[in-house]
Structures are given as structure tokens and as C-alpha cells.
Image (cartoon, rainbow, N blue to C red; front, side):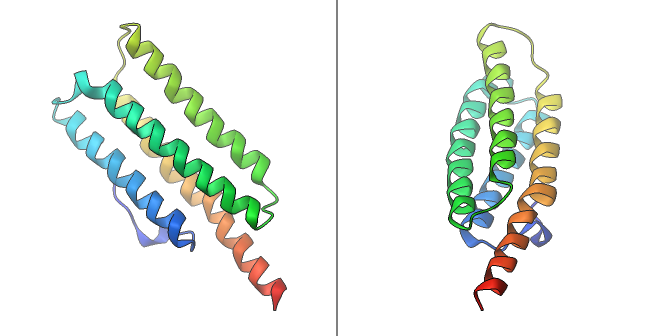
Length: 134
């Protein structure tokens, strides 16, 4: 997984956190593809969930500050991802087999698509807010 400037939403704090999330997922992806971290998957996912929760809270706070019209929908998307990952963590805790590569593919697709199709709307809203204040 790699960061591209086209993913930027134009809000420095959000862009920086997105870059960090991409790095975290990329790091986890490379370890999993080498087969070296299967036992550490639970810990890595807990860290990723904690970081993602903080990022989502920051992003939602920013969206509220600009009266982002799609905030309720966006919050639901965030909540669903966290719930999905927590369910996977519970499966790991119960000893159920989890395909780490399938999970990382899911997470990569979700993150990239969320940034490109949902978070990009924030940039449009910021631009409209700036235009209306002139």
C-alpha cells in the first residue's frame, strides 16, 4: 500500500493522519506477506484500531467544525469499520483462524476507497465553505 498525493483532502492534519494510516497498513502488509507476524496480528490490529479511532474522532471533529452535511453518514462508515475490525479481533481472541492476507486486502481496499470517495468530499466542502465566506 502506498500513499499518493491524489489522496490528499487538502486538510493538513487529516492528510498527515491518512499518510500514517497508509504507512501502518503497508508495514503490516509487508510483515504478513513475509509470514513473520501471524502471531502478532492481534496486537497490530489493536494498535491500528486505536490509531484509527483517534483519526476518526479528529476527522469527525473537523467535519463538525465546517458543518459538513454528510457527517452522520460518514460517522456510520467509520463505526462500521471499527466494528468489523473488533469482530475480527474477537475471533482471533477466541482462537478462530483469520486469513491475515485477506484481512489486509480488505483493510487496504477500505482505506483507499474511503479516502478517494468519502474523504475527498470533505475537500469539496472546505472549498465551498471558503468560497461562501468571501
